[in-house]
Amino acid sequence: MRDGAFGGGELVMGRPLVLIVDDEVSNIEIMNAALEDDYEICFATSGEEAITVAQASLPDLILLDVLMPGTDGYEVCRRCKADPLIADVPIIFTTGLGDEESEANGLLLGAIDYIVKPIHPAIVRARVHNHIELKRMRDQLAELAVTDALTGLSNRRRLEQTLDVETSRLSRTDDWLSVIMLDIDFFKQFNDAYGHPEGDNCIVMIAAALQRAVRRASDLTARYGGEEFACVLPATDHEAAVIVANSIMEQVRSLGIPHRNSEVGPYVTVSVGIASARCRPGLARDLWVKVADNQLYLAKVAGRNKVVG
Ligand code: GH3
Ligand code: MG
Ligand code: MG
Ligand code: MG
Image 1 (cartoon, rainbow, N blue to C red):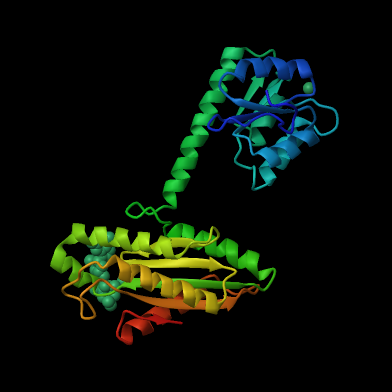
Image 2: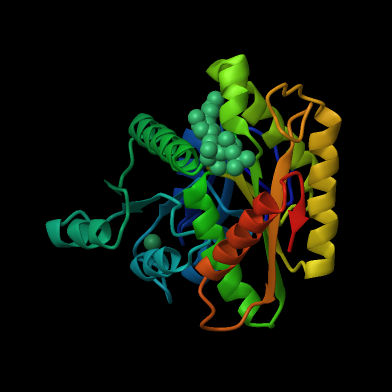
């Protein structure tokens, strides 16, 4: 068990973390004994403490008593589900309340399971294991749903989610947001010359080059469509975005992918459009993509292998 609710012990990486909440220390000890071989454990002995520990340590699962002085388990569950940071953490009620109404209440509040005390250690272990496994699979699916399969970059769905979050976050401080769109030049001719599988390889290499050029942890690189990519650069003004765009051009140039059918070749090139603006309430997220796409179009018209914005 971790030393105290706030975890003074060494964190062993790789083992899921279970938060046990109960006002009776003897109950915590019983559940700890059932789980400590397989899980990292932290604990709390009141509802308020449970919320603080959950927010601070982001457990993989919470075992939650119902009857506690002050904030009871139902209220803890309600507040966890209302906090986006921990809303997805599975909660299992472990309680002496075995009546139908109490159990239905707990499940309706969003708990994933309900165990009536006295607990059977093997059953608690099995349920905790199953729910952590299900959560892991849900997380994997959620990640797949926002990832581009070919390149491993974010897909258009995550790009749009990120734009939503960032435009509303940055508008609180009138901060800058830049979006860069880029598109491979004469890519149809590349496929015609080298075949579709080589075309796919080329897309993967351009994606890797993009990741080398766009480096801040808060930046997002996405495959927007076929051979078109987008980058979201929060808190980045136009001048800084131009530097990133030039770095993208440099990274693509240094790949030196032969393209014998390109009119601007003999290597694969990209055209780049930049949109930069301060975020303000009411400015639609689509604006940045539209402007960057328009600048990209101008780069194409101006002869390709160019940055416009
Ligand atoms: P431009 O310089 O104006 O961008 O010309 P382009 O040929 O690159 O543009 P166009 O939009 O005419 O053609 C894009 C091509 O990209 C057509 C399509 O077959 C190819 N493409 C789109 N997605 C993929 C993909 O996933 N793999 C491969 N190999 N090719 C793709
Ligand atoms: Mg209790
Ligand atoms: Mg193209
Ligand atoms: Mg295109």
